[in-house]
Image (cartoon, rainbow, N blue to C red; front, side, top):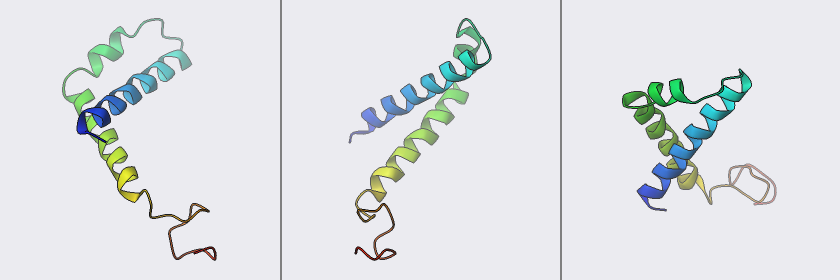
Amino acid sequence: MRLEELEQIAEDALNEACSFMQESIGVQTGDVGAQFFSGCHGDNIIRLFRQYLETELDWEGTKCRNGLPIGECKCC
């Protein structure tokens, strides 16, 4: 998966998280969220989410069919 795709997924995840939190507390608009997460705040969250996605992709194939690390279950 290309870096641009991971960045887009991470940005979409941040937007979904903001929407969820705003809806949960009854916020009607995303004005404060857009302001808060512009610049370094948003960049840091997106970078963290992208690193998480990269880790998930790196670990792909290291688990058995039961979801356990290979070698830690009886199916391997």
